[in-house]
Image 1: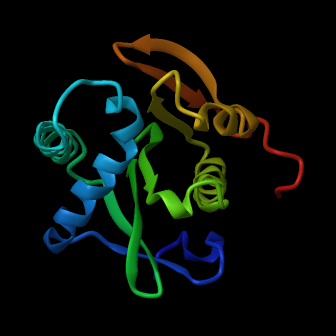
Image 2: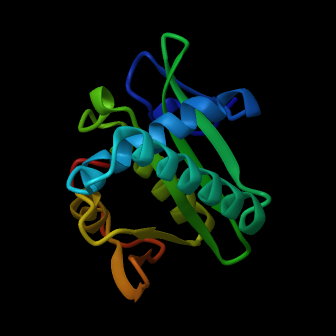
Length: 172
């Protein structure tokens, strides 16, 4: 059983990602970049080709640099609604990605999964790290969970949460 399942809102489940999920994952990736590409004067076909290429590069990067990561698809009633990727290393845990289809954003799923990771990292005495774009609305969520900005790395902020750092007051 997935160690994070107990944290999910009712009706949601996690299962391991398979290659059969790649089309959904590419569509999901594209949905998370739509707002960013809206002002770009490309045709819908050009935007989709660009996003498919970017997804392929991201996927290859993750496989190469995080070979032992856990790759989950988030499901509701058997249908995929998101992805959740996490990597455990000797000195840290890394939240690689949590993405949801539009209708599941802002409904507490990301918070629940972050809660699960914080509990696991704290119990193991490990730092929890992530990379996030500086305009991502999740920055506020990460701040509430005790993440601190360590440095800028290209287009991303590198953030770290020390074991036992602050948590929102309504959690254990």
